[in-house]
Image (cartoon, rainbow, N blue to C red; front, side):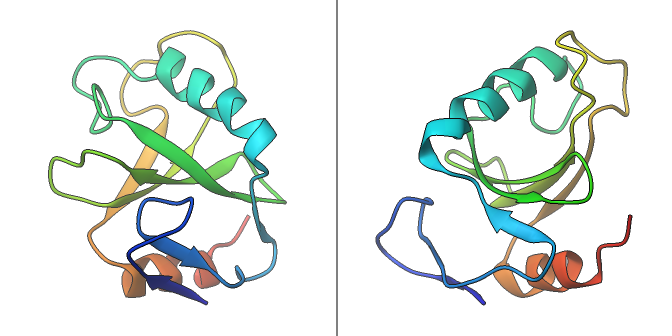
Length: 113
């Protein structure tokens, strides 16, 4: 279950569990996802210029759940990274943004590969 809170490592998110096959990204691995997101996102992408922190990874795909530290309008994004280590043409990396936890939770639970 995901819920909003005022403390914790995930910008106001307390993580109790994620639906299978999603899992929490260990602190030591977060910088890899931040670097790849920064490399792939170019001008015109919804996450261009937005500070985001990786929270969870789907064990069956390249999708990552990010919390946005300074969101323009949304607080969460599920991003499908390409792992190209270069700026991708739009619409890549594909991104779905969420303003609140309930729709994010529904998307994670309904995610198919």
